Image (cartoon, rainbow, N blue to C red):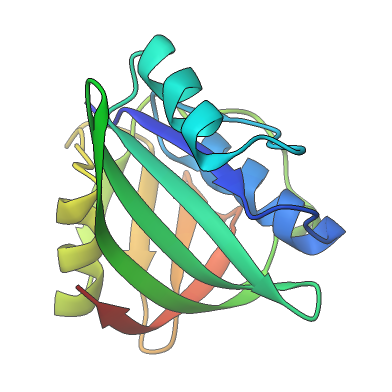
Length: 160
């Protein structure tokens, strides 16, 4: 089960906040946390309280999301697992689609970089789900009944 708490760096722009919310709606069993002025310690304490094992922190540059930092939690300890540099292409609202939360997700086709990222965040998939994660030649996106609902983004580089 994906047990993610998804948040942003401090003082995020609107697009970064929207991307973090979209990811939280796309990965089952994940929640969005509005960070505000919370320190990393408070953020990790909240994640442990919520029963989450991984925190994704969306970082930005000039108001646009550009990185996803995965942090693994174990009781009172944390470790940085991986950093993905990304390029967001479309948010759910830009695709004009619904904003409902996925309860399950099916992995259809992804490249090695994306598989590595999904393994690091302990993503689990359901073969019978109508909600799909698909990677085309240029981007990763989420689909519902063959219709793209987003968000659509590209993982440009992974750092472990």
